[in-house]
Image (cartoon, rainbow, N blue to C red; front, side, top):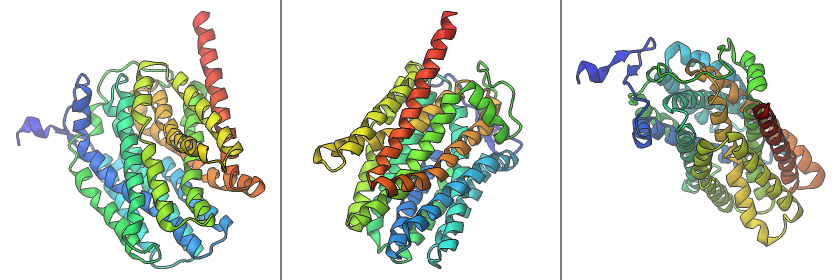
Length: 419
């Protein structure tokens, strides 16, 4: 390999293979294919693990409140990782950070097979959440750096499609072995460890794109910490921040409560895994078209359209939850809740300088994780008051608030433009 192919080395020791900002979209995606493959293996294992933990707790007759708190611990770890993860990335580089977080996740997965104590499982879920958010911070700062504004929504949609396709595929692995044994936890650990191979061989470093000139937005001053970044984000991009928070509320509620609800309703383990898998694969369908629309039109309008459709779907499912004709609406609901985060992050990254991407990505993940830690507990409270359909009433409040903020943001921009 020549000196030009090797390129220069970043301070963290990463390979510095230059990426031309003018490359076509296909070339940009192919340049990160190895990284996406490693990420795909990891989220497949995480998808299997999330449902497996819920099913094992139901089998062990854990109270619903205990299940909610154990599952919420994942997002508490998510919050800590979002707060501190970018410091680790900045210190050792993206390649090494990915490897460290994946190794920690693999060790945590093996711990579930050792004991069934709720306190230990809560600690393990916390460790898993910390590890996974570190990897998400690596991925999102990497991808947002690779993508010019004209392609950012579509690059992020590839990331989202990879996520939901592999999380959905992970659900079908539940049938490989008994959910009451240790084999599935071992499979999760193996997938986490295997993700290190392609990710470690990725040749593109984030340093490649930080030198690309882009117009700076209102978030010009680099935040010193992720917590200090949040007020700045709320001032200049409130819709992006609230969108990430709402996404955390809705996504965590789906992952944490749907398997428990279905088992309580008498569905077999195989039926639970099939529904979860098909629902997550259905989430793939709107990713690309909505990302393409967000690249061509104002992202605020796209977020408003998504939130409005979800509000209508949630109201329909709450009122007619027992009717057979609402089944397609349920799949529409699931597919749309997973589009909010990607468009919100792309909206935020339209307004920041390249050097801020790691800190802002971590700040947005912190916001998502805060919503994720609140979602299962808050939704279970609503469900305990109005029944299982309360999950849709909870979603109705969340999506209606997001739609209202989006309308307000669009109106504020229109008024500013007219002055």
